[in-house]
Image (tube, rainbow, N blue to C red; front, side, top):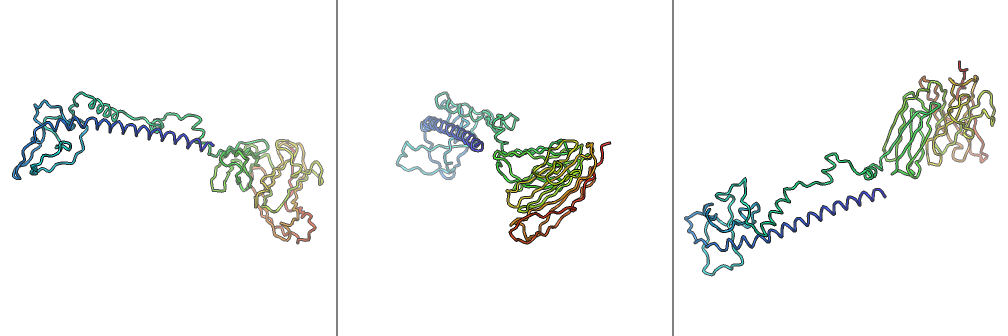
Length: 389
């Protein structure tokens, strides 16, 4: 709707410009027509010069009327010169049959004697002269257009400016508790679009809301964190922010590609499967709590071939507890993954130390229709959580 409105505004402006130009042209032509009979009548009243022989030449002085002649000046003396075909300098014998008075021939010289070119002689008073004067004044008046106003720095209407910028993409990244990156996206012309967000080795696919918005919490992997959003047509937008509390976090990420399904399990301080200390996608917890870890789930599995990720984080520098957190990878056996070799990437981050990235290959059991899960304990090293001194 906003694009249609912009096109409509442009069409109205162009229509007004065409109408003004048409009226101006019609007024000018009417003035020239009104002035022409007066000039023709003045020339017709002058005596016809006798024919010259081929040995005589026609000078500019002889073509122009005498300086003391009282007749009204012709259009040649006005700023508007009548456009008539130039006459041959040599005289042409006239026929004995008189020429019809309805088609007088006008002689024209490029410069008239006694006329100052820098200060043209004004036409004789009358309706035609007034019309010509009005046209001349209109041509010399400065014309102001919307483009000129924009070039001079005149501000556009705020609503129009907003409509022109409506298809921009806004990406804002700000730090959040738990060394997280609060990522806000607004792309009003890309509603429901599939996008890829990436940060320091993490990458996942998701889609925008119908009005082009997205809010995501992404675990930071670097102290100077940059997040990039990429659209299917290749457009990109990035933003970055410093992360002051990254040194206080232990973090492990697992990422893979659909249609495979994977789960990252964290068992805090001796917890078993299903206990309160079992942190996974069905018990993810929240960031910012000092004595417990939390899980972040990224990506949309409904997107074909989408990249997905799960990240477990524990605030080691703020916890009053100490001990071990066991990590485990769990892979459901499905018709889409049985009998296949799957790959996954892990990223281990311990404070501000350089992240360690590894690739894991999983050979899935053959398809027997029984389903089940493939559990991989020990693939990821345990986290050692120390007391906050």
